[in-house]
Amino acid sequence: MEFPDKYDYCFIDADVLKYSAGFAAEKTWWHVFKPDGTHVGKFSSAKEADQHIDELWTIFDIDTSGYYREPEKIIGEEEHAIRACDTIINFIKERVKADHYKFYLSGKENFRNEVATLHEYGHNRKGVAKPFWIDSIVKHLTDTYSAVTTDGIEGDDQVGVGMIALQKRGKTPIHTGVDKDIIKGIPGYHFDFKKDKFIYTSPEEALLFNYLQGIAGDATDGFHGIPKVGMKKAEKILEGCETEEEMYEAAVNAYKNYFGEEYSYESWDGWNLTKTAEELFLENMTLAWILKEKDKPYTPPHKRE
Image (tube, rainbow, N blue to C red; front, side, top):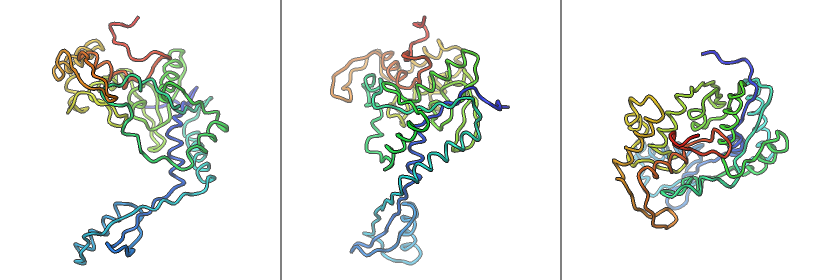
């Protein structure tokens, strides 16, 4: 399809920028050692280090039992990280022409933390390494590009709210980032700057993706839907649904088939709870739902005004 030559607003997911630019200023080398600590070699990735150990055994018949590898992180200068950030932004502005560019960063608080009971929201992100210069990049984005830090919601939510609000006013916005939750879950134009690719998501495609995530969960965000049900099986569950009401009913029935009418469990933070299958679906749907309107999380279709 054809895409507009220019957009009214470009909403940029600055959370992706701070990580991409930060890691661009770092390099991890992997060192291989013999059991006695003798240095064998230095490699640019863990995979290359493992391949070398394997080749020593399979090709040169060297006993590599006890060989091990260790990482060495090299941190570049702060200026390198800032320059990487500016380079990405300049590329975005070259590819996506817009009257206005808005940058959004996620704050520390997130309403989803209070919603999640089955699993701690974002639990799989704990312990994940952050770029050394991430705070410097955030300050640069705030001072130079007027990036807004959203509290209580994710930067994704603010992008979703902005996209929908402008569409309702007849404007043409575009989201720039790589997060599938926005690209597939928010209708409209998107630009994946890592793939240098423009994408259009229809309202029907976005709504379907929202319900698929509500059923299957999202391991990246640390919430889980019906156990052993992935996106393919979720598609089967929603097969033949033509309206949102039908999708809602099919999803709740799928939860009932697995959890029963009621399900008792211990929450991730130690509380004994009992919820209906519908309440469990609503929890996961609320976690999956990128906001389309300010302060309005997911509401079942039959309860909307």
